[in-house]
Amino acid sequence: MPPPQQPRRPQGGRPRPPTPTSPMAYSDDMAEFYDTWVGREEQIVADLTAALALPPRRRRDALPPLVDVAVGHVAAYYEHKARLADRDVVAALDPRWLNPLERTFLWAWGWKPALVFRFVETGGVGVGGMGSTQRRALEDLRAATAAAEREVGREVAAVQESLAGPRVLAALRRQHAPGNGEADDAVAAVGRSLRVLLGAADALRERTLRGVVGLLAPDQAAAFVAAMLRFHLAVRHAGRDWGSGHGGQRGV
Image (tube, rainbow, N blue to C red):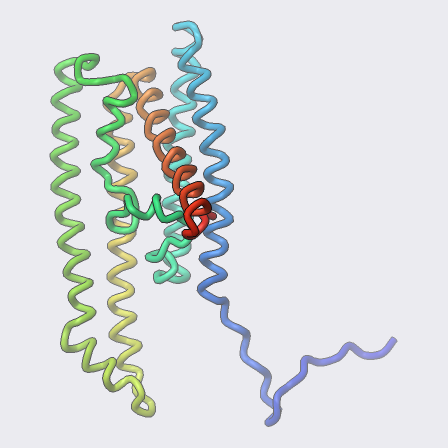
């Protein structure tokens, strides 16, 4: 048997460095995950809808685990996006896996946390179906979420403004100087800040969702999460159909 061939070396005898993974490959991986994730979401909505139609006793037993599955489903998306940001924060900040209509809802690279409160009403819960303690707790959570949104918004604006700050601009002007890595260091520092803010925004989204679910009875929580997921699926499908029908970007 002939000896195995050695990897070809370029002139000079040095082995070629490993080819870096393209940022587009990371984005493609997220698109594949998201497509599967949306399919799973459709099944979760179907399961919730069927359970909500059960007789009271069976419904009481069936709903809590399904609500847990729905919340875990949303959390899985944030976890996967966090792993993407760890590998390539720019790819995470440019969600190409979303279609144009989905991207119109973006706030700090995701859905605005306060949006979930609307689904308490559209899910058929409504303040009229809640006790006074529930209503007060929900309003407290809404106020806390709004304050946290403002804080994240201020921090995002500050980091974005820092990109035009004198240190970064001066470094970028000198980026072609031999042996000067100052530009890369300056931009990398901004990237690290954006990674932290992305994580904070997604944590606020998940915390708000879990907070609302924790305030509701099982049937209320199931109606709430079903309404929320149905809305996302409607936006997903409408954006995909709109993009393909009007010459825009087709949703993944």
